[in-house]
Image (cartoon, rainbow over all chains, first blue to last red; front, side, top):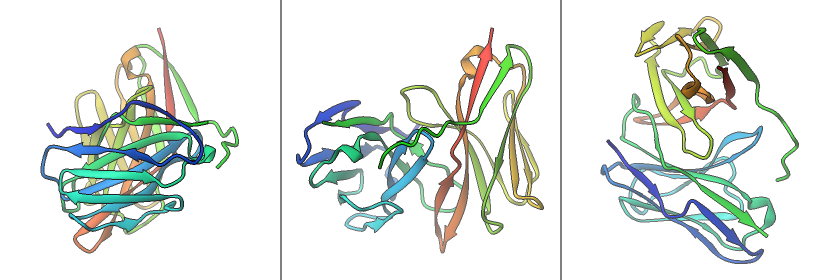
Length: 113
Length: 114
């Protein structure tokens, strides 16, 4: 089975800090995604990547950046954390092609104080 | 942004009963659909999928029905168990050439009463 591992389950950071959320998958998937999940708002796509060194903005990229230096690792960066970035962050990977679902990590619950 | 207190639709069923969770999708060109289950504190897990050239697919205790005419997807869970309590959400695939991103519904919370 594909495993998607997010490095932290819970994080507490201060406003203005630079925050790194790490995600690693072990099945050589090209496609990786970062979502945030908030009550009543569902899953919202922040950034995604279809290959190494490649990134595309999702629906809510403001305040975030990403890095994909290796195929298995997709990092989400909060350049200067703000309280409105308190959320559950979910990483997912997917094999290329139309008929595959995402495999999600367990999530990182980030609180910015 | 601020959470505005929106609540998920909730379905409450008795243990042993069948559950039906519904989803309306947005794009008539979507060609692939998935149901996910998310338990509290965990990431979403794949349950079952269906391609647009089918209208029904069955798994173990779960069935997905697709009605393309009205852009409606449903998940049926037979003999619902307490372990089925979770948030369920549907996803549709919007193709981008050979790639595609999933668009997720907001979810339905299933609560199973013992």
